[in-house]
Image 1 (cartoon, rainbow, N blue to C red):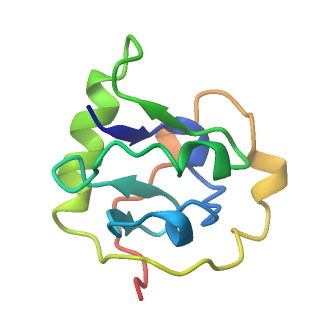
Image 2 (cartoon, one colour):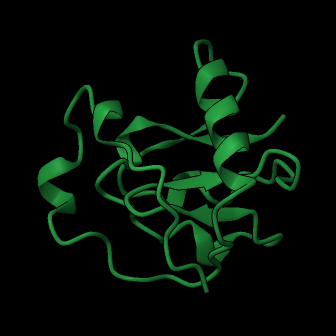
Amino acid sequence: MTYVVTENCIKCKYTDCVEVCPVDCFYEGENFLVINPDECIDCGVCEPECPAEAIKPDTEPGLEDWLKLNADLAATWPNITRKRDPLPDAKEWDGKPDKLKYLSTAPGEGD
């Protein structure tokens, strides 16, 4: 099992989760974070830290596409291990539906 970053992270990109991860398995895009499923040890400490509730265990139904997206993007994005400020309008985007169309595949800064 692994944890997966899902749609509600898009255009929010809270990073509270990355600083608690014991194996540094988060990778950063321009407006989204992902978890590398090959590195995640299923400890679950990141899930309650996400203010947007965007992190889910991959055992929840319907997350297969998100798991693949996390794996694919983690292979090309830089690693992030330090908490930073969320995107400026994160609170406005938190909870909005249908955000996948806003996902940027451009890499973020990383550490």
